[in-house]
Image (cartoon, rainbow, N blue to C red):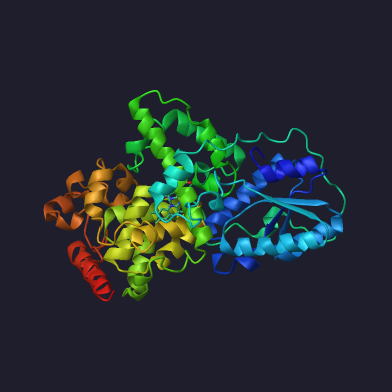
Amino acid sequence: MSDNPALSAAVAAGRLLPIYILDDKNAGNYRMGGASRWWLHHSLNALNSSLGGKLRVYCGDAAEILPKLAQETGARTVTWNRCYEPWRVQRDKKILAELKQSGIEAISMNGSLLREPWDVRKADGTPYRVFTPYFRKGYLERPVPEKPLSSPEKIMFFDGDTIESTAAISDLGLLPSNWDLKKPTVWKPGEKGAQDRLHHFLDNGLEGYNKGRNYPAAENCSYLSPHLHFGEISPRQVSYALPFREQSVQCEEDLRQFRMELVWREFSHSLLYFSPELPHKNLQEKFDSFSWRKDPADLQAWQKGQTGIPIVDAGMRELWQTGFMHNRVRMVAASFLVKNLMIDWREGARWFWDCLIDADLANNSASWQWVAGCGADAAPFFRIFNPATQGTRFDPQGDYTRKYVPELAALPDKWLFNPWDAPQTVLKEANVTLGETYPHPIVDLKISRQRALDAYAALKSAD
Ligand code: FAD
């Protein structure tokens, strides 16, 4: 309700008819995944209760429903906050044209980015493809964005009939039948949950964020990504809540890093906006001939957290059980899929799309291309994470890995991330039998690393 420009504009224009349309038809391949639908169900319920039960929900083609509804209700103005998924951009252009043709005022606004993609471009008008100058020119050297809006004080609702049939939120069938989060209480979808998360982060996570954000067992991250994605909090609100003056050198680094992460989100949206093929096409064309392996068994082992590589399995199980995965582990698990298993990044992106509560077409596609080395300003392909070393470095006490891979819990730290190297006596004492209680690694890390480097070298020589 707060910092929602479309809502504030609509309230200022007259009586409000708040609506949500679940539009799977236009989404095509990018229909929301299971975890996102779970979130959406709860988020819509939270929004509906903030609106005193006045939210009307529809299911179908928004390009048909919205103009029809506007006509039927005699609406003079229709407002919405802009989305940046290519299919939504196309659809919303169509809606805008149709409303205008019917003499209805259509206003689209910026509710979810600090700056619109078209407002941060190079001097020659082309979009940035490299993050650092984008960050510097677009954010560091420009004044902070305008102040967030407060919630509308008083809302007058439209209470006439609508001919279009409306559904209850529960009729949208958003809750999955074959999958549910084991710990739904960890997450509180909705505006209040978002504000609570923000304040918890400011009090407990921000100090030490710069270093702590790399450690999955630490509590330094904000966990704001699903709230930001669903528009329950805006990046303006997050930016404005950050302390204005840094109290110490340490905190200054923490603030700078956190602001930078918010801008990575903006950068991903800019990439998607200017390269709508981002979710399905390598931004670096030379990768089009990369020899990805098709191996359903390996892919399934990765999806289920049964690769025999403990930090990767911990991440994939965290994802399945909670709908979330810590950023450091996302990078390690994604690198393992793309490089050690040499499976196409689009397979990984598809799995994340279905399982992440923060699944976001811009962030997910840009991050997968970044890890795979084929994106804009991406990590070079030849930089391949060693997941055993990453585990030792970023989960030094093993708390995170033991939580999600309990069958290895009794192993000493020294062997937790490479149980295949542990002496038999150690394994026996920890009740671990590789191949029975926990899988043998599905690939040898050294050999698979070399295989990936060879495939990359072949690509380079074909250049
Ligand atoms: P914090 O560290 O607290 O960061 C604050 C906010 O900054 C986040 O909420 C997020 O909105 C933004 N942010 C942080 N890191 C990134 C990043 N690398 N790229 C873009 N925005 C960022 N993030 C998503 O929101 N949706 C996705 O679908 C998604 N898929 C990813 C897939 C892969 C393979 C990888 C490596 C990363 C992906 N990320 C995605 C980025 C990142 O992992 C998450 O944004 C972050 O883990 C969310 O946790 P947080 O809110 O605690 O982040």
